[in-house]
Image 1: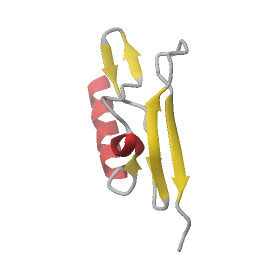
Image 2: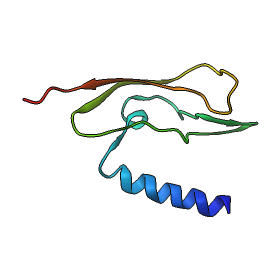
Image 3: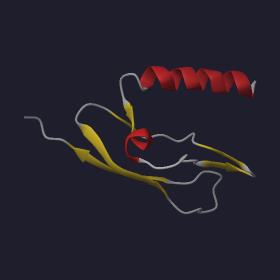
Image 4: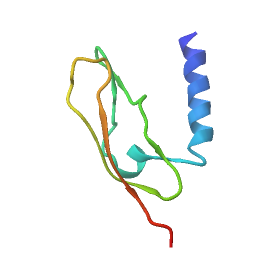
Length: 81
């Protein structure tokens, strides 16, 4: 079941990122693994930006006891010209 759900999520994210931009892909560094599960590290948390928004920087926050790491994103709203 998890595999099917993961496939659905991947397809949904792929169709969404054709319109929106993944902030980590634009301004992050490394794998950006936000999900911690023993030795498994994956990026499952995303910040998506649309037209007029720009991701200046993206980094992972410290482990605060959750099974997810915080995703810290600095965004700029570009004024319309």
